[in-house]
Amino acid sequence: MTLIVGEEELLVDREVSAAVAAAMTALTVPDADTDSAGIDVGVDVHDVTAAGMIAGELSGLTAPSLFGGGCVVVVRATEDAGKDVTAELTSLAELPVPGVFLVVTHAGGAKNKAVQTALAAAGARRVDCPGIKRFSDRMDFLRGEIRSYGRRADDAGLRALLDAVGTNLRDLAAACSQLASDTTGLIDRAAVARYYRGRAEATGFSVADKACEGNLAEALEQLRWALATGTSPVLISSALAQGLRTLGLVGSAGRGLSPNALAADLGMPPWKVDRARQQLRGWTADGLAKAHAAVAEADVQVKGEGASAGYALERAITTIVACRASAG
Image (tube, rainbow, N blue to C red; front, side, top):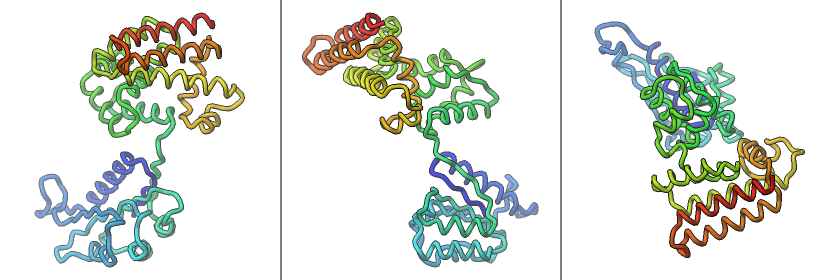
């Protein structure tokens, strides 16, 4: 029996696949009935969701086959199991059926914890798949993925990958696989930028970051890339406003709280608090107010009042950088 606890879908699926593969190997009988892959064709694999099961279904799935060979039963999301299914799972955990490998997933928490308790008491192997929410955890995940392909990446490259792909683990895992296959050498920011050509370095938030940092040349370059690759001017204007708003929130909160505590108060991830604190160097309250006014004017222009959205955004970025420079 294997109990997989956690809500990180990709990690749970990987652990389920590993548990099923191990069970199939254990049930393999090396004889004439074995197929070319070395797996006994008599082994049945049942993959079901607990919420969709009815009373007695689990007993039917685990009943001995006339042809032998055993079976593997995967029951997913048992936190949503009904009372009858929970009782059957508990009974099966207490009195295992010979030749049956049981793989159970549970999101964790208190909901229907009886399933976890029963399997743990019966000696099930437990695997935890905690959610990957923090920036540092995502960076660790990416390092592990890259390392699994025998490759290396620096922090700048991993940050660029997060900017390009987002935070979905499946997308990040696929991106690591593609980069490992299609690039050579160290996976750094330049490698990610070449591969994602525009996505990794020309999003609205990248433009905003460069502007808030006071880097005019790179902010304008990012802006032109973003517009050339189809990013909506409205989204860029929104990103600029959000970047300045974040600076204002973090700056007004002071430096007494840790990033985690402040992130909880402000409703944003800790890595964003860290980034904002770094960007705040050189800003004053008056400078932020003037920069906000410039973005508000640009927002009106890009929504139809101006002749050129690109020009309006360039002016806003130039003003933001000037406000920070004058404050410094």
